[in-house]
Amino acid sequence: MLLFSLFLYLAITLLIGLWAARRVHNTRDFVVAGRKMPMLVAASALFATWFGSETILGASSEFLDGGLLAVIEDPFGAALCLMLTGALFARKLYRLNILTFNDYYRHRFGPKVEFVSALFMVPSYFGWIAAQLVAMAIILQTIAGIPFLAGILLCSLVVMLYTVRGGMWAVSVTDFIQTILIIGGLLFLLIIMVRDTGDLRPVVSGLPSGFFRMWPEPSVSGYAHWVAAWITIGLGSIPQQDIFQRVMSARTEKGAVQASWLGGILYLTIGLLPLVIVLLGRYRYPELVSSGDGQNFLPALVMHHGNLPAQVLFFGALLSAILSTTSGAMLAPATVFGENILRPRLKDPTDARVLRLIRLSVIGVAVISAIMALWKANIYELVAQSSALSLVSLFIPLTAGFYWKKANATGAMAALVGGMAVWLLCEGVETDWPPLLFGLGASILGMVAGSLWTDRKT
Image (tube, rainbow, N blue to C red):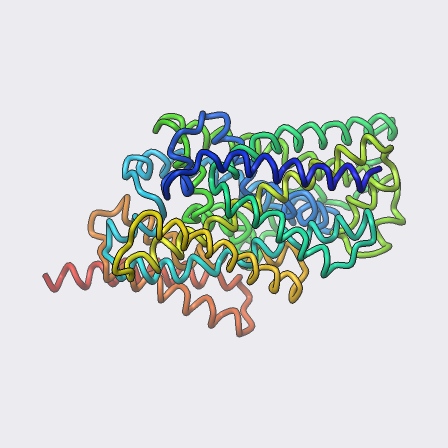
């Protein structure tokens, strides 16, 4: 019955996505839903940007091992990202009336920076999508014993089909419905766990000392890792195309700003629910914690403790969350590849031709991500690497372009290439500080030095 319910849910999601595809008539409809989304729908889409395997499975597993300090990156850093987007970037980007972040880099710094930024942005999504496919395969394996490979292939196919047809219309409409299921499913499971646990004082008293501490040990290295955790997604995901497309799909500039803030608030509050649930589960079923991969703990807890309605609601909510994240993440790099890498090199870049290329790119992104999912199956690692890549290369040119008048193409290129090069170098050597801090520092230095040097020459 449970397996039938979940496959029925997948089929309904696919049908909703295909129904939404009827509104796609051109590239703008496909990429930013024609900028016609109500604020609540846009906010739901922003909330659903990452609320998938990273928060429900990956973060809950990290929380069990290391307490609140282990989940600064998500949900806290992710909520920070959405709020900063609303406060500093949504209004400015909306006024430009563009389709991709890389269009902004072309508008501000020229076509060379556009091309390099697109080359850096596209691969940053593969790990993210792979993490979601891993999570869906884990669910199917837990529920029905479906082999991991078959689960990866099935989930890739479902998401790819409705994303290829419906683009941002399909993403936004399904995100809105899935957000309702996510919130309802997690709240229902939490109520059951609290009711059956009874007295909550032993749950808290049995935890290690400092489990709820939000700040690190007083050392330079400790604070460096703490800052890195806040900014990996908190800053690194601001210049990401999936965020951009969801913000730009709002009907109005005011709606884009409000959707960003509301999405961040939802993410922070709803993101705490899986953490509380696994805390109660750890107290009631300590044997499940030590029995295998921490990423499987929450699904195993639901199968062990929940009745059939609770299982259907939870796994439906979990699939909802992961599908939401995966569909938007597949669309984003495909859009950048088609719009900013292929389109400028076409002799006849008609809208219909570009739209066809973007749809074909969605298929390519799905295939590459599925291969990555089979190669590396740790959800938290896959997501962190994706955000770090955009932080060390794309964030500084975006921010300086808006807030520093002297920023120019030379500085932007130095920030892109220098930050990426230093980060990759530090990833290959032993460092006391997180490599992304060195990459971010190099990106800042490249922007400042490159812009001032060029300004002085002129």
